[in-house]
Image (tube, rainbow, N blue to C red):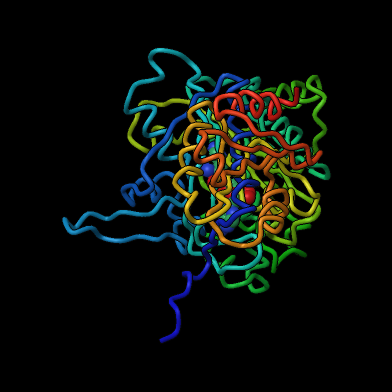
Length: 421
Ligand code: HAM
């Protein structure tokens, strides 16, 4: 019988990569919390309607990529393809925005999209996300972008390009829609099948088409469709970015794939990621989303960053957590000493030291060199004599210095050693 394989488009997270992801998630949490964002978590599945209405029925995500199912009670549910509608639902249902505005939340978790798997594009992937809900301020758009920027700075990632655009308000977009329809309608015969259909439903999405890139290049830009107020809002966002020293590129073609955006949109691209999958993250303002979900009108802005793509960039640039040597290995010399060795390890852990038990019966010198390679700073050996006397022999794996003492004394010495004193 062939072994059962991992489902298509999924990844196993294995050591040592698991430490890399933990470092990335931890760094994001620290940076977000340093800006006042608080942890939030929501269900992995939601009512399908949340995404049909929120993310938008005409988007690729909703049309083609959802993992939807009917539960035993006949309810339509979907594994979340993105976090924003669920996070907004949770914040508004709990009325958090009535206590303080904006509500600043951060989040990390798995998302599910049934897109054709390829490098950087999976059926299950992780996002880190922040949302600032309840205020319609250009300063908040800039803050959200800055958090993403500082996060990648904290990881020491280089080579990012920040693309920003504005989609204006609803009236601006209606004007822009008409301009796009006027441009594309005479060219219909040259459009791919997808775009011909989108022209009637969501003409902004035509700007995302890779197949019709030649036509996209000639399409009108949103600038002339923007009201004075929308222009001024966007000028303030870019002004805040300038003041924060964050370099960006104005990209009038950046429409993003989800329906709820208004005003500011942005993406972070990385040069090492390929083609259509070159965005490590993106986000923007979604002032109309709350109403679409049945809540009172509430503005919001936020981003999501792809964790697997971020990990790929970190791997490529050799970035990761500082290697730590913050534990010891406890070895029994012979099988008869195993209980005593386990008791020593237990006592060391009780004294706050991470202690890994080695119960193999390979040669001692081999075991010591494996322990050093696996990041142990010291080895603690328990043989017949130590077991009888309640002592242990510890060895500094860097200097080779070795000492026998009572277990409590060994703990004190090891704590000092691990603290680098
Ligand atoms: P998004 O652009 O759809 O935005 O996704 C954000 C990031 O998730 C992408 O830039 C990419 O790094 C990663 N990602 C998306 N799909 C996949 C996939 N199939 N495999 C691997 N990584 C993927 C959103 O999801 C919005 N909710 C962002 C937002 C938050 N807007 C406002 N607030």
